[in-house]
Length: 200
Picture 1 (cartoon, rainbow, N blue to C red):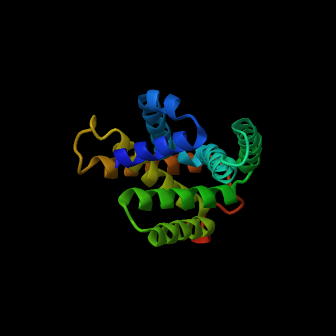
Picture 2: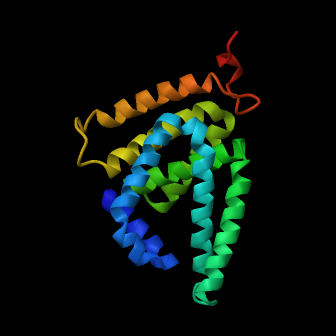
Picture 3: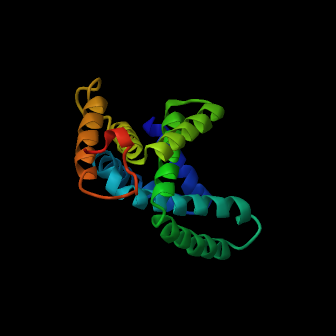
């Protein structure tokens, strides 16, 4: 699975014209992704909007390159996706509930993609994740951030971890407990929990 992630990063580098820089800095990129994955596992409920903004910027880069790379000079394409991508990232950072729904839907698609499911299953899994987070935003964020973060971290750092049968469940449980504790002290949404789970 790590090879699949590295190939996807190389494809992004080839698409955006940063192939040489990405190939040389691959160990650093993997390290940075591992840190982000671990942060999502334990603090996802606080940083999910940052993750969503980053995904918006990357998606804008990919879309602009696919549409205009062969039609216009590279400088124009780079300027376009830089300006539009940064603008969308700032706008997306202000989306609290919608950002939670979309980022968890994208993470669901990522998990299904890494496992090797067909495109229909990937899309369906992402839609189901998004619907769950729409109805139960805080619970959905806690669960999906912990699951996706721990799974991605173990995938990227599989050579340095021990107890392969227990490391993912351990990280998921610890991440969910910590995020649940954090969520009791912050107000993200107007109705963060279902009525039957609210404190009396």
